[in-house]
Image 1 (cartoon, rainbow, N blue to C red):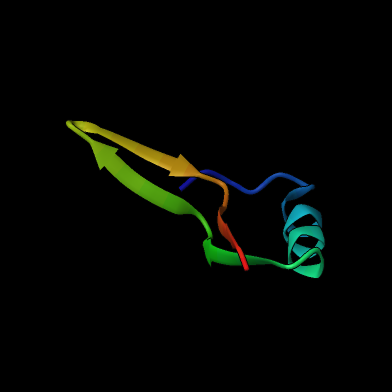
Image 2: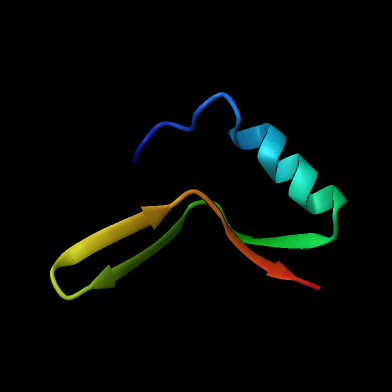
Length: 45
């Protein structure tokens, strides 16, 4: 799993304060034989 950068927690906190819901941390999915990991999965309320 990739390491989180120094901004990760600050960005997550700012998104939550702005009303976003963090659904996945990290968001992982596969497309064919390729695996992807995105820093955050989010949804707006």
